[in-house]
Length: 552
Image (cartoon, rainbow, N blue to C red; front, side, top):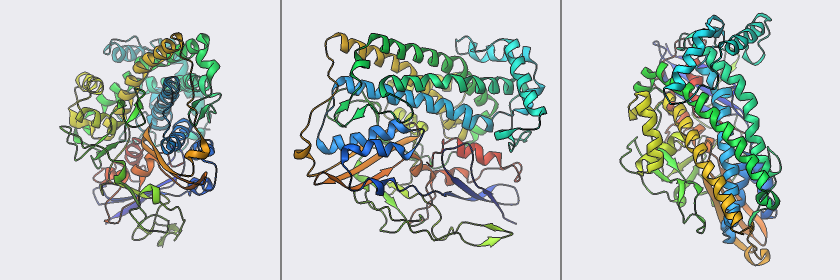
């Protein structure tokens, strides 16, 4: 007899997410539904405002991805006004956005996702000497010195955790599924993971400092304006640039000596799931393109992450991305209005119809009707996944040499086939691959900024006549955010915002079914998933968290 599992809220994410799953007698998921239970409505707040103010308000969509919403909103207005920003502004925006990626990926893995793989209580049974040897083994395999190889340090962390557990006040860890049969790491590997978890809490502050150097503060930086950036003195200061680089290099060292070895360790322990494609989902991948590498007019130049569409996991080719093919469907979303509207014409009018049936005191989603505050985006009438895995897949399909090199290195060192990328393990690994790639490239961007300033170029903004360009204009800011393809669309009339729509990465991934009853990325990824204990659905959390949900 089919059984319903409800997880509400999904914790260790930004925002409010509910997952309902139906499992058969073999504890295999046969149906799944993803629901955002929080209304946003930022778009309606922006109507009627001066478009130059949009960025400062739109970045409040999320308290984590502030930089990327800030930039996309500003770029939507710049695109509408036909503005090309100066080189210094482009590089600084890339550095701030790059720092956000590094911060987001590290915090996601260790503090939001790692406990789906790491059993904290198992670490209490570890031998610290063996843990030190294990850490050295995984780092050495990558040609690195381990971030931590001291048995004393591992013993100190173990004692810290033991004291915490013995007090009986586990706090945020109190409802963890510790001891679940689907955990596969050894006690020593779990001790390594929780040690790096605690160290990453301290180190992530480095990246906030990096963003603040050029942004003024973090979160919610203030230095990006329509036409460029305002941090002139920081760009000109060799000391400020050097501080940014020093902070970055230390962070990059942690990535190479802790984060990547941990990913290889997990990929080895869960290799069977990776090879079996557990959590694969749609295998349709969309990328808008990310990080402009030249000073051509917007969307006409080279990008670090090339845009495109990969269908059915076929990495032999990619289809060119066309912004006009993005639409949103509201059939199963708590909104009024027509379906399949382009974001330029999108409407954000709430139409909450409530939940469905009640059984044993539990209200279930009305899955035949509307059941989520997230719309269902479509690309050319196709359901797609966005995010780091999509960027790696499209990059490989495009034959991008840099992306292909980093992905191939991971596959070679891990011993996994390419198809293993299409899994929860592969999705998690893709994020780490991207983190290393970006951390390496950012060193060149810092040097590029210094060289440009040394040449005498200190221009940071492009002037424009607001009254002339703002009477009747429309534009979009589309690029890659840490979690995937992010777009802001704006229509401007008589100097004011006439309409505004944002289609964010988790809108693509966490969406409900569409007008053809096709599942969203989260929903599809759960189908066929085996749950070892329905009362502890850790496998559901592991797969959903692999997307890095953000419903803020």
